[in-house]
Image (tube, rainbow, N blue to C red; front, side, top):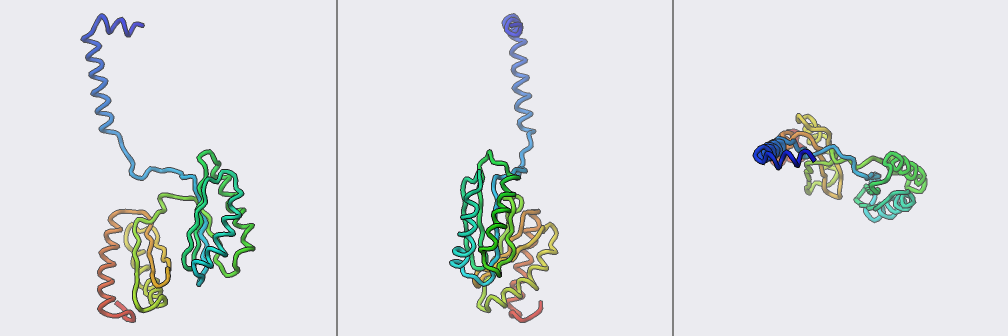
Length: 217
């Protein structure tokens, strides 16, 4: 080949070309951008069902098990996992990489709608959605105390949640109840928003402890 002939006849020229290519490669690698949270589509879905007042055992028996049985027949399912909490059941579905996600999601919705008649009447409408890494909470705050779940719920819904939602950069906040604990889930947004939330929460908690649960502060 002519490249071989040129390299043999002009070794200095060939060496300089190789050095230039190496320098260009190192420079290009140093300028290469890397995303910490790339936009990816995970082959998964979840079903979330709220069952107010139910124990974890009742949620597992009356919610998670019927849904798992219905979803097992979907083609392309790799793994199904379930979690039962007080008043809530969550079922996760992992698909194979070769599965058609649009078709699989439609089948999941159809199966959940078909099994809806076997579920308790007083549940909230099941929520079916894809697994989205961008929706994963980056901050979870737990609120606990001796005043009971009703007092904690009122304090969380009327005092803490509205103020945290006004913090710049906050997407949304979900309040979840586990026995006598309240947890706040803050989806991903700006890092500064999380820092502002922590500062405000520390100040609000200190005021609440000084004033008592029934005070406005």
